[in-house]
Length: 172
Image 1 (cartoon, rainbow, N blue to C red):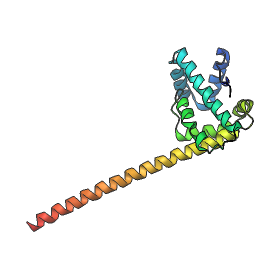
Image 2 (image 1 turned 60 degrees about the vertical axis):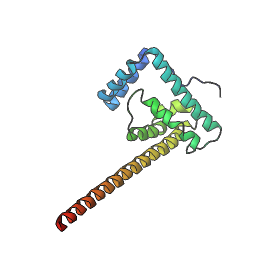
Image 3 (image 1 turned 120 degrees about the vertical axis):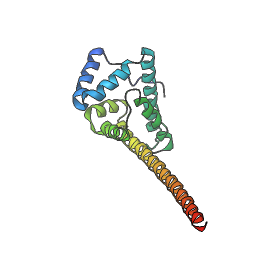
């Protein structure tokens, strides 16, 4: 697909309007943090963030148009780039990521914007993001279980060593 400009800068007036709306909806602290983070970038850095976002959504659009499932490995491979791109604005928790996926397919503003790109994009994004978050949650659970097993093995080894030490002391 030819390079398509999906995201572009808002006028300053429109940007201030969006900032006000988001502050009212989500509270000033996290919004101010995001605005401060964004404003700390040079124009070149901001342009790079927009270029990457455009490439991510162009790749999603290509996947839709080529008939790939949102659950496919190819589509799931796009989502870590999407996740990383969000970090240019704020640190998204798994809960936030899941919520974004839902918002993309339930909030009228997101739906309208994404449907301009492709009529199936809102639902496609929600399904892809939901799977991505579930995979991250599963990986985190497996990491925690492995850490628990490692700790249990260390505790068991320490208990056996202590028991052996007590046994040898009592035989002396």
